[in-house]
Amino acid sequence: MFYLASAKTHPAQRTGWGNSATGPSHYRLGHGEHTFAVELSPNAERLDVLVAETLISLHVLDTDGRRANVEVEGVRRRYAYHLDADVLWLHSNSSNLHVLDLTHALVKGQINVHSGTLKAPMDGAIVDVLVSEGATVSRGQLLLVLEAMKMEHPLKAGIDGVIRRLHVIQGDQVKNRQVLLEVAPLDVAG
Image (cartoon, rainbow, N blue to C red):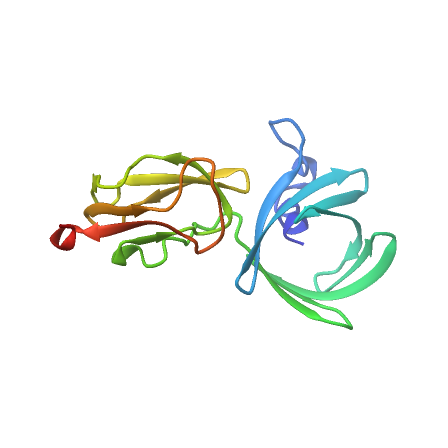
């Protein structure tokens, strides 16, 4: 629905136009406390949707702003929905789903950053470690680079201090909220 809504914002003669090679569209969607990387690839009249290594083929048959008729893996289904900017509510006979489009949202992360504990904002891989234990850092200084959903996310110091403990090295796979490093404030670093 996010994909279709974004296409409808352009005049018909420009819908589908792009200045780069065609390829999959990448989305970051949220449901509850979970975040999912979603890859959409147009395939004739269908969309191939890749989520958590599961490929789903779907065809949106029609929508009227309130209901959508969708063919999922060859089975026709009808969903009531409400799309409001980056929020989608889907309702079917068996369940309800509330989804957030986080694709262009700022990465939250850095939970407890002011306490000196830097945590991963999402699942990903550490692609660069720019500090070592014992190094003095300044608030806002780039410490690590996390790659998630084919994008690099800079992780910066939230306080002035000294790197007390570094829990990761370049190449490590990390989980959402995993502690990456600890910074001791300058006044208690010694």
